Length: 254
Image 1 (cartoon, helix red, strand yellow):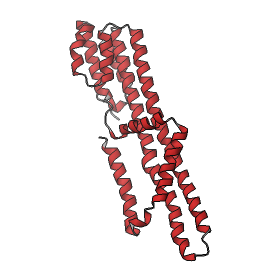
Image 2 (tube, rainbow, N blue to C red):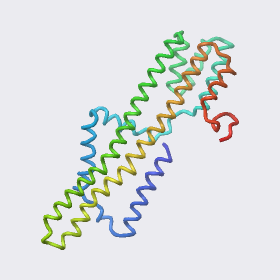
Image 3 (tube, helix red, strand yellow):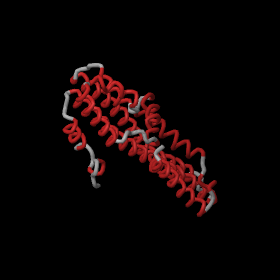
Image 4 (spheres, one colour):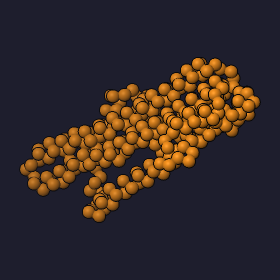
């Protein structure tokens, strides 16, 4: 579980809820028709923009915003250097005994194909095809949530306009104007809330996670190809470390 995402959501909703309770009643901010306009309308617009399959899969991808599943890139580099040293001393087939200890499926797949004798060009092509497909899926999920973030406030505005029209039609009753205006504004409130507290942060977190995962996968591919080509482990390690931020390198400083 990504504790930062969880803390952020709880804190954001907690602050909004706290400010509501301090200034009045929570019941005044609950209006089912307004919720239906914003939530239902936003979902409907998403289905117009994207195929149903992609919209549904985007919510599955959104789970990545709550998970810490991206491998530590510096640990991956250290393991690749270890494998390069082992392959140089005992041959590529010696890596087979390490496969059972590998948790990362992408790393395991790359080394398995290497042990199976796949040539470097085919190995490179297959691994890059896989990460490009992953990148496309994750980018689509991020784009869908970014689209939801831009649609929700618009649907809130539409709901507000509907409420204002209905309010103006009842101008002969001054006592109804205040409550009707409050209800009309709730749709804008709902749209702004879910856009800025849920959809936009999830879109940003998914994009960040994808960038991190692409970095790790790229390092793994370069490491596996270096082993396949018999590259010196020390030289390979220096080359892979060059992919990392200074703070992630062994002994690096910020």
